[in-house]
Image (cartoon, rainbow, N blue to C red):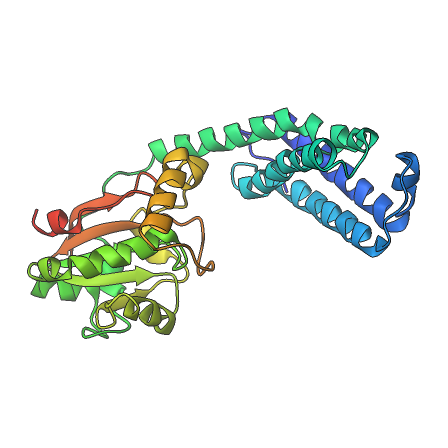
Amino acid sequence: MPETSLQPVWITRWLRAAAVYNLAWGAWVVLMPKHFWSLVGMSAPEYLFLWQCIGMIVGVYGIGYWFAAGDVARHWPIVLVGFLGKIFGPIGFVQAHFIDGAVPLRFGWTLITNDLIWWVPFGAMLVFAYRAHERERSRRIERVDDDVAMLRSAMVEDGPSRGVSIAALSEQRPVLMVFLRHLGCTFCREAAADLRDRRAIIEASATIVVVTMSPPAEARAFLTGYGLGDVDVVSDPDRALYRAMELRRGTLGQLFGPRVWLRGVVAGVLGGHFVGGLKGDGLQMPGAFVIRNGRVAAAFRHRDAADRPDYCAMVMQ
């Protein structure tokens, strides 16, 4: 994979070095599982195949690093997962040695090459990816063209207006299009609850159309759980309509920033929305639009995944 022109060469070199190291370390553990234990002066574990499984996992990470090396801004989740592993590994060692006394101090030598030397470059890669996404976001068109061709071809697939295009539906009365994240997302569930709680006010002024990345039957089952089983639904698994409305994949900050974590606790635990399985593109950002006579009259594009639109205010604009 060719590296991007804006990506510093050190990123490619460090990730490929990490890939080679992981593949070599994984092969060593799989093919010579007792060698490591003899080096640290410990008895090999009874279930040696579990140690070999760890070697296989480390080796697979190497494949991911090599793949991500060409475009870390695009494949940052691979680097993030690896970085978290390199953080949690030393934390586990501290507990195992200093608290539980389960492993000797010499066992920690492996942390230097497995984890510690990668902290700075992996952290810097994630910072680079974040800034690259922020630059892209700043270049994004902030308003959708009033005459979005996609609205004329996007059909309601389930619900009272089945078979009617969004544009045609909006000529009868305003349409509130709510684009959800994947259906397992805490904030997606919160959005469904908000629509349920404010439905009477919204529908006094507009028709609700929910857009998801899931098949119509799956979306219907989800919405039924929130008392929205009879609203109009559009399924957009390829995210073509999301892209037409300038709803893009989120950046690191938009998906995992401090505010998102804090709001996730509030909405998930205190609000009772919790989190479910991934159903759709987990990086896709949500949004909401009011369509009048085939034109975008109001738009809300989330600054981050935790944003909470005021649907009532939107339809009353």
